[in-house]
Length: 100
Image (cartoon, rainbow, N blue to C red; front, side, top):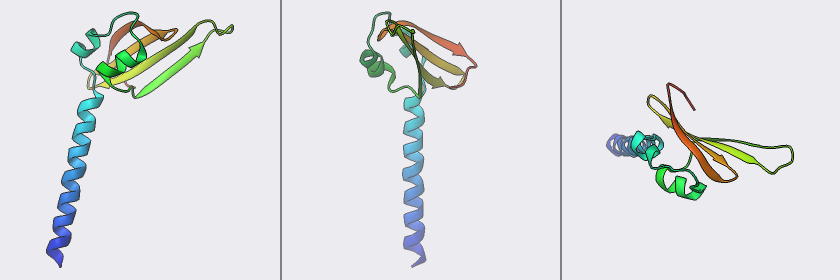
C-alpha cells in the first residue's frame, strides 16, 4: 500500500512542478515582445502578444474625458509597462529593476 501512495505523491509533485514552470514562462515579458507593442494598439492586441498583465493601475480625469491605464508585466530583471490613454497604447517601456 505504501507504493501507490508514493507514486500518487510523485505524480502530483511532477504535475505541480510542470504547471509552475509553464506559468513562470508565460508571465515574463521579453524585450522582443515588448518591442512589438506600438502606439494606438488596443488592449486586446497587446494581450495577444504579452498575455494578461499581472496588475493594472487605472485613473481618469475629473471630467472623465481622459482615462489612463498602466499594465504591468514582470520579468526577472525588472518589468514591462504598457501605458494606455483612452484605451489605446500611448507607450510601452521596460523598467530595469522594478518589481510588479
